[in-house]
Image (cartoon, rainbow, N blue to C red; front, top):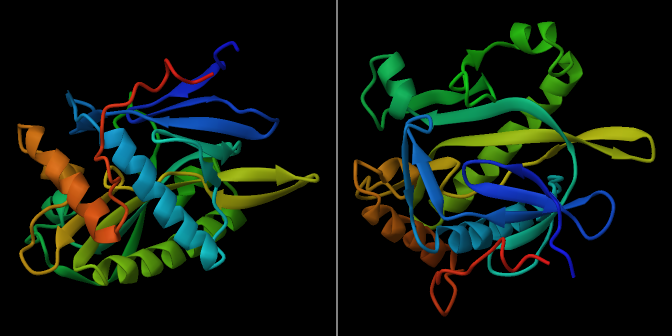
Length: 254
């Protein structure tokens, strides 16, 4: 059987056409990038772990009524997802000051914020994902005011649920990046979560030690990141029994 057509390749995933209309196959890569794609590396097995972690978290979100693009996991590195019209906005939920947010406001990392803060960024590697306002979003036609309200409402709900879930396994969700898309069904459109949720897209700290358990742990050597991703999967109870072995992905996609 011929290999399916590639639709998109990003920093951490590849999308292929799905087995039926309205679906895509999402393949998780082992590539890791930091500092706005200025630093690159490979963590063998990262894609396997992210696939399992995202499957678990998106399934849990679905159980509380949050609509997502996730359909089911196909194998160790691939998921079947719904095809959506992507909205080129990254929604960042800030719970505790860290990273660029802490530097921007002269705050010590780990300082709790008075409440969760929502920020918007334009999804563009070439422009290094500039921060934008609702005025930018509506002026350039990226989303309507109603869609912005829907994205914010969903983002707050997702953030609240995941914050509690991670707290239950002794981790603090410092911040979270999520993306949304328009799902067209019977000439009707609704906004759904259209992004994986894994240590690539959120900042996680150990509740007691403040040890970083996400991609931001990288400090010049990618080696220590493997342990962080495995620790998140272990605490969630989903570490593959055989370990995150290196499985060839695009070559096996039929």
